[in-house]
Every structure is written in C-alpha cells, then in structure tokens.
Amino acid sequence: MSDDTPEKVITIGKYYPVRGDYANIDRFTQYIIDIKKDGEMLDTKSAEYYYYKEAINYFTKRMLAILSDTEKYVICVIPAHTKGTSASGVRKIAKEVCSRLPE
Image (tube, rainbow, N blue to C red; front, side, top):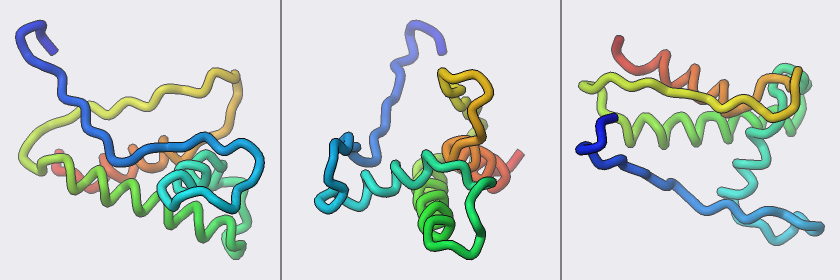
C-alpha cells in the first residue's frame, strides 16, 4: 500500500480476555476462544470440535461478506510466537476464505 492510500481497518467484534469464570462471556469472545484450538487434534465427534467448526464457519462467512468478489487480496496469517505451535483456526479461516474467492 502506498503512502497516499489510506489503510482500511475493519472490526467485526470486540474480544474480552477471559480471566477465571467462563460463564459470563459473550458469543464473539467464545468464538475467538474456539478458533484458538487445534482442529486437527480434536475428536471430530466431540462437542469441542462442533464449536470449533461453528466458529470457523462464523468467521469465514463474516470475512466473505466483507471482501469483494471482484478484488484481489493477500491474506496473511501471523504465526504463533511459540516455535512448533500447531495449526490454528485463523489459518483454517484464511484457507477457507481463499478457497471461496475467485482467482
């Protein structure tokens, strides 16, 4: 992006870090918590996997609703700070979005 092109920042929700009791968190924050899990390590028949997939679908749909199907994009995923960290839901969302946008 050149200096004369303003950057566009879009937010889709507010994440509230959870400290202690998980009983009073909103759905958006729960989706964030769910995508932090390694989907490849979850039992595909578990409730935890169901909620992981639900969160992936939620964020994929939100991204596709924001992005134009007539523009080209570069989607980057920042790696975790811990070396050897497993795949994240963020990476899965990026792959899903890229697979649904025109080339």
